[in-house]
Length: 141
Image (cartoon, rainbow, N blue to C red; front, side, top):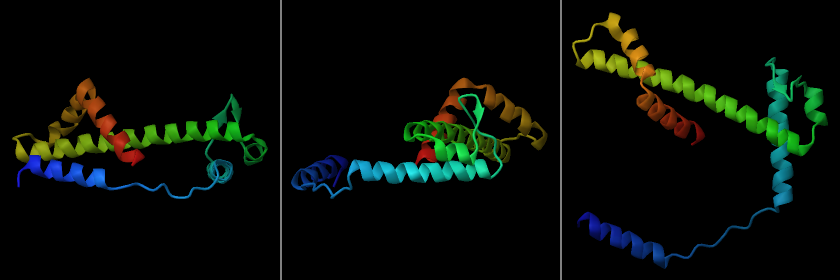
């Protein structure tokens, strides 16, 4: 069997299937539960000693309790964006260091030149963009 036959079989099977949507909770109930989960997470972050700024004011657990749902959604979105950026930056630098180590094993590259290679790779906009995109994909999966 070649790839064309496999694709035709998969397409034929997908046409035969009928999809039944699962019963979902009402959006208001899901939204309320989701907002309370986000509120609790933000309160835990703020209570843990991290300084969080929102609209040029320091956020406290009491202020989180007094916030409207829309403000909680916006603050949580900002928190997730910052966390994702920090995680992808860390993953990016780890991947670059790993690449430099593998390159030094396979190529005649002394260990003393690894930091130079990592710095050079960090300056490459194409490679940096590709690693950042891959790290973001890994983070959000």
